[in-house]
Image 1 (cartoon, rainbow, N blue to C red):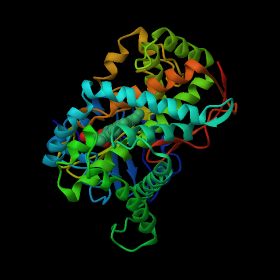
Image 2: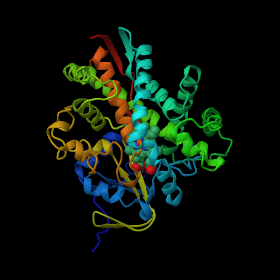
Image 3: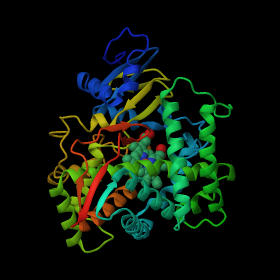
Length: 425
Ligand code: HEM
């Protein structure tokens, strides 16, 4: 027999825990995850959401997507910029799109991408790295953007477009975040101040993408060129939006962690030197990236809405119920990772953790189930090649002694600059 509703904090406040969620979402989710481990109710005033933190609960929410769930709060399919792209589409359209882009991320094209990624890393490092100070956040975003522009959109000479696209992407992400947090969501076509900046930034991104379909030059553009004309910009921009800030922030956190732990950075540098091949990276370097993604998962919150009654952990919950999965919380569960707040890459080497991370629901940096990130290998490759390249030639130290706190926006960004001091190795 199914149970009715999981336990969770009780409050009489009219908006429940919503104000707390807006103030400090990571703290609130972590607290609820600790006090009600596994699966919990989250009272948000008129709404009750459900938080899945244990692997089996997460699996119940992420695995049976198809006829049971759609993307949840904050992921609006009516989004005019990317609503019909792979991130937000559902049903048959999603299935078709997912199948169509699969060859773009297969091992063969990945081999060619490695060369392009390595070239872009070389260009970005020579631009940012001179003895002195740099902001790892700015470097990470820049590198992720020029790699995406080159590999997925065939734009290799980026000097003047990179600034425009970076700014416009940041603006639309900020808009998505404000919309996700707000109960007031005017339709996109209303001429509101709220919408104006968004449409301007969207225009910049669409003007950047559309001409690229005149002569599609990359595996991704060639696939998307087969889509209906009115939809293909949304499909292409989805890859820019989904891959840019995520990878940029992942790299930035990884570099800041390496600056905090010089011995680990040295080991990455030594591994790169012994490796010899600049297009490959070793097991320790991979472990460092996984550990950074565990501690600072750029996608810190994943949401779903039930489209029919679903059973999660034995509870029967009605259609319309909203579910949250937080990689931040699950990655910090002591039962899954010993000393969960410590940066310890070795944990990914000594056991079968690396293999496990790809198959179970404890490591959620790239999500799980059928909607798991298709860019996973790509992002990891970029991160690994970047830190190999950097640690081979540079020493990193933190600019400030206190470790920067995270800012949970659309992705997990640093609150302030991630300042580094770099010297030649
Ligand atoms: C470190 C970098 C990245 C992280 C942490 C990340 C994380 C994620 C996560 C957690 C999801 C699942 C969201 C959900 O279930 O609702 C996702 C989906 C997605 N990601 Fe990534 N991602 C990264 C890089 C990339 C890259 C480089 C691309 C492509 C260029 C990409 C494209 C996508 C797309 C298209 C989806 C939607 C897939 C679907 O719904 O079928 N991501 N990503």
